[in-house]
Length: 81
Image (cartoon, helix red, strand yellow):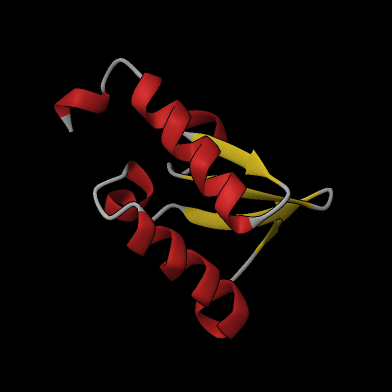
């Protein structure tokens, strides 16, 4: 998996900011997950190790962030954070 520095890629940063603006109180906008690329899929994740956190996959930044939001909201601890 290749980590992506979205801060250094203006197009990716615009996509992330656009998603955050459309979902300002969503988990992704509040948690700011890391972004990576794995086998031509975007990955939005939290945690030191991917296995220990929340992870969303998608073919675009917005679909990965949407998948992240969906999984985050289904985790038992989501309401306590």
